[in-house]
Every structure is written in C-alpha cells, then in structure tokens.
Image (cartoon, rainbow, N blue to C red; front, top):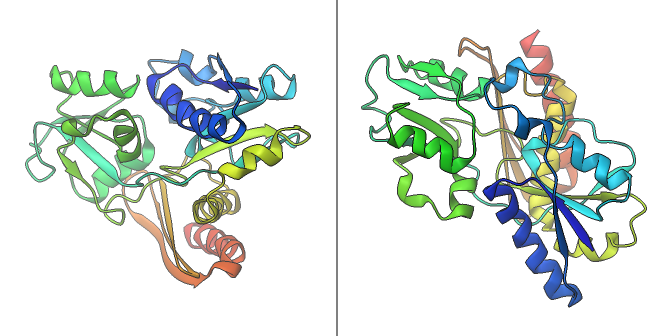
Length: 290
C-alpha cells in the first residue's frame, strides 16, 4: 500500500500514526508519498481571502483518483463540505482533544490592548471580538513550529492553535492556556483524522478497521451541520459534539465577522437520531442567520 500525505511535520506525524496501526493489522510495510497541496504553497494570505475549497486536499484527491496512492490521511477539518463522488472517508480513528489553546507569554486575561495576535481564521478573529479582546489580529501562516517560533521571537504577542496538533507533536510546554470548548468553540472536525480512499479500493475493508465509531459519529454530525448551513469556512462557525453512552450532545455557534452571536444551539439526542438532528441544527442555524 502507498499512503499520500502533505509534507508538514504535523501531517507526516498524523499519517504515521495511521500507518503504524495499519502495519500492525496487515503485517506489511506501507510506502509514504509526500504530495504538496495548494494550501502548502500559499504562505502570505489569510485563508478567507483565498478560494479555500479543498485547498489542503485537492492534490491528494487527484492522486487517489489516478491510482498514484492507495489512501490519504487528512485533518478532518480540512475536508471540503462536498467530497469527490469517487472517494470515500473509509476510516475516522479515535479523536484527539478538540480545544483551542493560547500560545503567548501573556495569559488571556493579561493580553494588553493592541497586542498582536496572529491568526488566519475568521472564527478565531470573531471570538476575540466576541470576548472584547482589544487585540490587533494579523495573518499568520506556517506549520506549528513556525507559528510558535514567531510568538517566541516577538513577531506576534500571541496566537491561538488547536490543542490536537500540539499534543500530536509533543509541544505542550508552549501552551499558556487551554480554552473551554464553549468559550472558543472549535471548528467542525477538530482533533479528528480522515482516512480517504477510492470507493472501489481493494483495501477498504482493511482500512475500515481503523474506525472509531463514536468519533466517526461526532465528526460526521459536525460535517453535516456545515453542509446544511452551507457557509464553508467563509463564516465564523464553531461546532462541537460529544458522544456519551447512547447519547450525543451537539453545541454550535454562528458568529458574524464582527463577533456577534447570530445563532446558538445546544442539543442532546440519541445517537441513532444524530445525523437527522445535525441536519435540523444546520437548517435552524441558517434560518436564524438570515
């Protein structure tokens, strides 16, 4: 088998966890192929100033369709709302933490007025405004190490990142503060990985063994809400769901770019009803925002 991955340290680390599990299952060595995506080539723009649909996945999708690789590993939150109809999410392994974290020499409450906060996320920028942080937000790109270094060297006073990536790279010592998931609501799918294959792949049965059922349900609920809402990453929206026994709780916030809450939904339902509930939540969010 050949796996396709982006070349960043986080992407290759995430891919290696999947490869390790598959090699244990199959007893066979898996070849790794680095593929550069459009998103990797763009270094100086905020993502919401770019046509970001599939920006980190399109080239990997093409490699799957053309048979150059057998599977690809993505951060679930990078997936476009609509997938290529030749491809499928064959496995979603167990999820990492979904929280956001602050990287800074300052605590959140200590951030001075006009501090520079690096972010290329409309959602994170909107939450800064919602919580009345008088910071100056500036675009920041690069891998996790690069963004941390830019803060440590004083180019920025702070940045906000996903705890999952920090944990996967073992960089927890740089965390100043971990935010509650309802204070800064994470993006749909944060902390989850998506293992993509061609629908007709001979390896689908094997790869599907990596599925974590509760994680899959959480991630697909969150993706369903975005699909129904129809805003992609161009609007600030946070979605977080958690399975507990036979129940799932789903929490969503839709913000304006100015940091105003346009809609908020907090729902608990039976797991069997989760996707139907997610669709209704997406519809309500959309209706409330219009």
